[in-house]
Image (cartoon, rainbow, N blue to C red; front, side, top):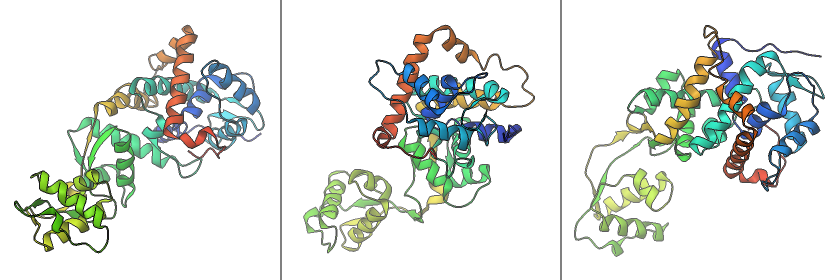
Length: 339
């Protein structure tokens, strides 16, 4: 039997997050796997099914649960076994209480951890979930941060930070003002008072341009390709084209200087985001610190669920429903467990 060592220090936090980026994983770690008895994929599904009793929800396919163990948990040192599995001592000490806390937090914040931590590119990819967590933790510490500030704090280049910011904003965890990936920046425009919005002349996207002209003529505020794209709706690239052409037709005018997206795209954490950072991410980061000592306080939720099985069952049902709502295609489709 091949056994893998549990990660150390910062890598432990990264690996732990990868094991918690879906409620299917969290419920499996919290309640389906055992610390002594080896369990098959069928056993895991049966245990999950019992927790969902009378809820109208179905557990994931046994193939998915078994693949979690063999492809994700085993390589990270969380479980051991080949066709049957059990939690390792480190998996029991860290991942099981973390999974319980994640289930509680999902219910408290009304958000799936799939939305919080996102997908992983492969079963052992710890980068994506880790970066999302660090973005949220950073934004919780500062009033706001630009995309370029976050890139510097994470020490990364490219478009990955923007990708994660968009995902976190879609989940309501942050407010993010950006014109979109791959676009250089934006300039503010206003409708010229007295101009007729019906005089718009576009060979393509005529209806969209007319809609934009009407909105701008009715509202004297400053419009950018970002806020206009939200109103129409359309991509910010299409909104930028419309604004430029409206200006050329002397229907709108540019009223401010061009702003670089990398420097002026601002992100701020929402109250919903704080309901993930404060009760889960910060305590979890401290718990995996090798100098932390006792984990008894961190295991409080795990103990509370043990004392109140009805509470645990209600939270498992709620968390599972949140995941299905975030990934509705899972209801009718068996997929490989890379998310």
